[in-house]
Image (cartoon, rainbow, N blue to C red; front, side, top):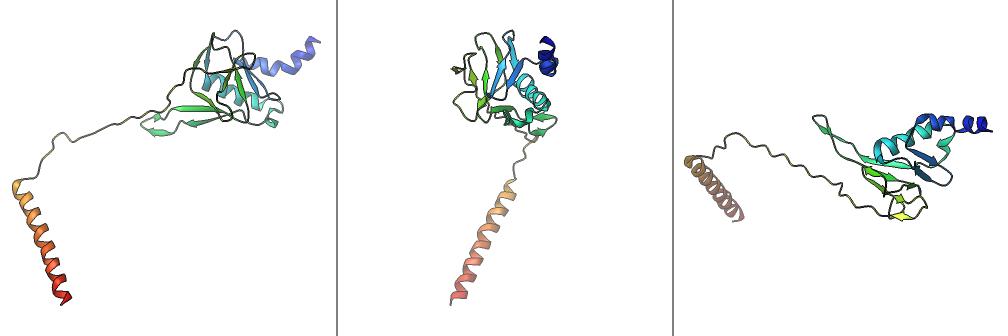
Length: 170
């Protein structure tokens, strides 16, 4: 009997992940001994590995992400993860420190207790605004003559156009 169980589940156990996936009930179970969980590495990456085992691709996708767009100089935008298609994360938030941002496309929370009661952890603002201002080393204002020329050219040109329009009306 043990050989049958090991044979059926050995690929999952061999992965050594912190979570297990139940495709039929759409629940991601965090192992009870886990004290730290990284959404990207421990949930998303584990789901990708699990998807490749046996025929797990028959189940609807569990998670998607947004972000990780390149913004130059080897930097990327932040990442946000969303449980999709009715999937839930079963986790004991009194024992597990979560790193990363996870929402649900279907429910008001992605987090559920081990008895599948909704949990509402602290909300994290995942929007980041970064502004870099670059200015020249020296700002050179225009000279008085440059300002005067600009004023005279503007006012003289606009008056000529006005006079020409006026003459064209007669």
